[in-house]
Amino acid sequence: MANRKVDLSTTTSITTTYAGEFAGEYISAALLSGNTLNSGGITIKPNIKYKEVIKKIATDGLVKDATCDFDPTSTVTLTERIIQPTELQVNLQLCKKDFHNDWMAQDMGFSAFDQLAPSFADFLISHVAAKVAQKTEQTIWSGAAANAGEFGGFDELLLADGTVNDVASTTVTSSNVIAQLGAIVDAIPSALYTSEDMTLYISQNMARAYVRALGGFASQIGAAGTDTKGTQWYNGGALSFDGINIFVANGLADNHAVAAEKSNLYFGTGLLNDSNEVKVIDMADIDGSQNVRVIVRYTAAVQYGIGSDIVLYS
Image 1: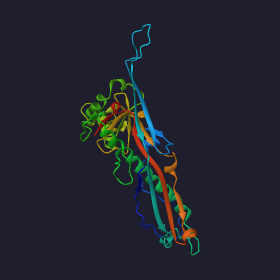
Image 2: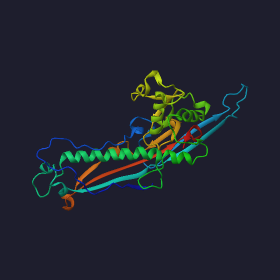
Image 3: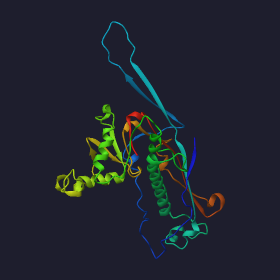
Image 4: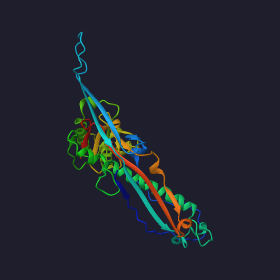
């Protein structure tokens, strides 16, 4: 099992100074939501200790003309793929004295051995957990096994499989998005087109182009757009194309898409809540230092079942 480290800067930077009593909350920059997992976009396997075998069964010629004899000539094909989560970690350290002159000083007490302000400890936990969610979302789709702090994402895995149905991508705009989505749907195996589980996973730029196309920015729709509302027709609800549900995967690179059944895409991890657990350790009682450490450890990987059932647009 490979060991990877997510490199977060450990240089403490204070940009807000103390100016009397301050009752506000810490505000973190908006982070990319890990929507693939939070919204149930793919199948989660939560309790993989080391690795797990994903088995798929396919049959051919199952129904035959009846005879008096047992005729086991149907073809049964068993395929298996291995999902082996990568061990990942976040290590962050800061010094409490860096906060002496800022607006948290009042919360740190008057002892020479300062205590980390509870409000800032809470902020650190939520901030690092959100960073992990963001990194995981990106890696699920666009990760490269050779990169530090990543595992091989679906793009990398599917591109290496010759059985996957490949569709060459282009720069997607409101003028061509309908044709490009149509090319993806046309590449879906006929037996799977009507599957309730079939999903079009598209990048954010493709989703924006599609919304604008339906808002009247494509000749196929007409100048007034859907319901003659322009782009105001869309209020953040569900999207679909040719009867197939669209899932906007924030981790997909621009102009990339995947068409697959949710039950054919897997995310594996040791314990489902590991990536949401962050430890904050005050080192004063351990080594006498003024340092505080933030630690996250978790495992993660993705895998798919049957490549020939998947379309990759890249």
